[in-house]
Length: 304
Image (tube, helix red, strand yellow):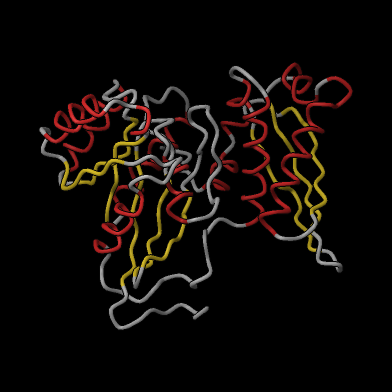
């Protein structure tokens, strides 16, 4: 069944995963889909665009919307990311608020709760990282959040260990409206491979450069060519805002960018199941965060 279909009792719909930065949204979506569709790092605000991960559960097809973290925006890019997150929740058939059980109700989480109260309608609560929290503290947090009246159901999960994720996806499958499937059975994401390739490289940069530099860079795939032997040649540009940042990305004698390229190439080869020839270039583009074209590529609203 590789075409778009589904049985007589098939269901299909969209489930948005929202939360504060670093709640574990991308890790959870990847676990629910059963494949890596969204990049994951320990740094906050890693996800910049809406990522769709598609999972099957019984007769149901669920398109999970992995949204950027919701926080107090300071810059244009921040505002666009937060707007995309709220839009994802508004468009979904079901919304899951994921909260890091370790940090609990932070100022950012409190702002999200207020936003949900203004929106009306109940959402699903998932408390994440339960393996790192004592049971008593976990139950107290669940009781406190349940008292808000915002939640129809509460799930306890550990996205990294897949604890509780079967219960969550089973519940969401039943919440999806009756419908034929909207995507082919073997499709895992709606992200174009050019953008996915850029995201993988950006993930490796986030993991290998420090402090605020990750937020001053972006990666674009300039060419993606499938060669006669089936291998793929990819050329990407890493844009930074200042010449000093370019020097950091390059590293001594190009060592840093070489390491990043090797790590990205290895992961892309595994993802695409073919040999990948990856070429990285580092360029300075002042104020790239104010360029409308960047937002179009990420499906973000430049005027948000």
